[in-house]
Image (cartoon, rainbow, N blue to C red):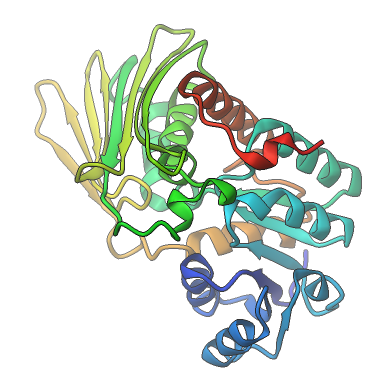
Length: 331
């Protein structure tokens, strides 16, 4: 067991990096030691804000820093594979923001290198680490609502019309599926496992990315996941699971829920409130710290094989809706 603090470096200085830096500083046993950006000015400003000793431009410089044990990658989607490979080649543990990669082929390349190098690697699906989701898993294991047959999950939000946003930029791996739909596919995987059939439809925007998606996933036990995600409407993202004895409702937002309602036929509803525990990314930091301190190379909360299966499902969806990214032409 390692007793010294786990030393973190971050690649990227956007909103995700900011949220994660705040989380690191609230976790005992975690220390934020380095920040890298494409811009030295941006890196320096970030370092000043969070009292980080080292800041640099060009992500490769961070990898030479011996004071970094694990790197959190918070860059645009299109850079995830490249930066993961760089970190793993340098022997650094990696927590990579979702989506883990642009496609399953990229994901497999990264996973294979991590296993070859014996380096820790995890997809930053922070939802999996939350107390509410851990409780959901326990209730499912105890068959609290019996045989679960249906998931209805989704949400919609309308960003400011800005063609420069990564969400609408095909070159950066934009689109609502990779940005938000991945949460829904991941929840379906958590509950039902990999689908046996995928049916998808979407409306594409003028920048060539998907803005309005509907997905049906069927599974071996006959269960169906009905998923939707959109940039053209407004609805708080939530999730309902329906079984033959009752249902469970994850209150919005589904990517960071702090309440879960259990409704069993003939009984009063039971509400599990984790609002005093659902602090955000801190739970993800704690999970990575736990794994590194225990010498683990991956987390059973978000296993690498499941990450790969989720990316394969996302590829299937994209193939059906005709969503392709320029970087996928690379050899």
